[in-house]
Figure 1 (spheres, rainbow over the protein chains, first blue to last red):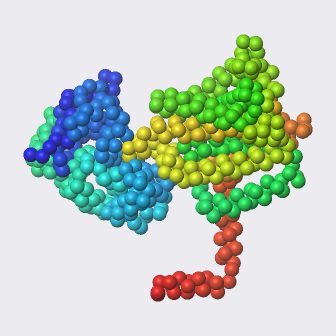
Figure 2 (figure 1 turned 90 degrees about the horizontal axis):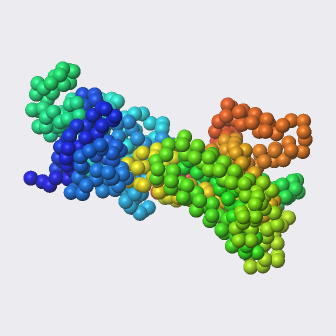
Figure 3 (figure 1 turned 90 degrees about the vertical axis):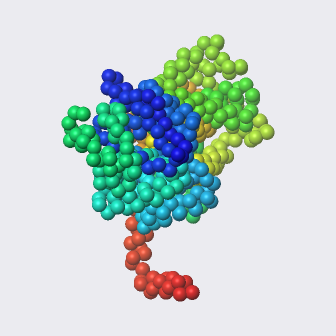
Length: 238
Length: 348
């Protein structure tokens, strides 16, 4: 079995009296692609924010490649070689697509190599036709791809995506599925997602969140056939 | 964000050098010197606000600190070169410390505005309350409300007795403005500058990429502070007195108005705004019919309503429209030649 690259022990996040993440023990192995699913308010996005340093957990521990990162800042976690994409496209609207990706490539390369890296990522994500355009002028699906290109420009070994297919049209979703599969050849991935069709197309292992805790964790077919998961999605109490 | 090519930069600098020689024929060089000092001060806020997204309501604090530092060190040292450098470094260091407190403390933009405003007020109050003999730094008495006169003004480096004033002082100010402009142009084109611009656009994305946003913002804020300090040192030498009024809220507000009117997000905008509004204020000050604050305020309202991007981007757009129209009026023969030439290259 491959090595554990990310794990959480009893991770909890409370907002006042509301427990958004409740004692979560989670493990991710090398080259794995794990989908986190669950209904609205299940705690998956809060869990995403905790492991990426966007929220400081109330209790518990996070380890990335054996190093405790529980209270690290986002830039320190990212600096470990982790690519992070948030739910809403998080891009620099006033800069061109090329400049957006360059900023990420420049973080770990000198100027010459950064330029080369940007060109190769643009080719990989197939956004050459919009490379010179301002990101603020682009459609939602294109902005999602630009953000993914930003993430990949840093050549991460772990990619964490929060709802990468949100708000996308059918064609864009197909493109995104291909891109994710291609990324997973070189990097482990955690994908927070709602869309069951999308999950079926990409996932092998799935973790189901419900009321801040992990309800079940198994192969995608078993999870999607499980009555408890269906009940959760239909709003029935488990 | 408006960006200018290096070609335009070179032609702009040549035009500025021409203007440097022509302008004294129309406007008193003493007034011109003050306008240039204002322009440098406006650039300091234009940099951090327009490119880094840091709206500082207390840029006058660094301006005043620069002026006071120059005066204090000039009294103690007896020449201008070292005080001039220290007058840049002191506010830069102050801005670095203040910036570190604000940015590492993760303050939101609103609180950043409040804190910079309050710091200016504290410095204003403090400078006003230093009338007693106990408020002295070395030989320099701070002088309270009356300020500090009688210090060594700008001299030729290494020659304390050879003062730079009148027309020479104007040339020094103008050349320093050009140097500042060119330096900032290359700063915002550098990797550091691009990252700071990106932080102004989307702080979280830059953090997610792996940059320490707090560090970049603090350094950028420090550079803005140093630039305002340079303006302060020049002002002290121009006015030959420094007073608590330099820290006033009206001074801070004026800098913001210069930037809005000239155009935030450009380097030329703040210069344009400071020079035009500074000149207007100068002329309005020579009459008593209309209150000049009322006029400046009205101009601000009109710009916010009808030209929110400011004068510089509007002029740039106008220039683009004129050149496009001129090009489209040219006979087609030239375009055909060009397209043939392009085809020729491709055929090769």
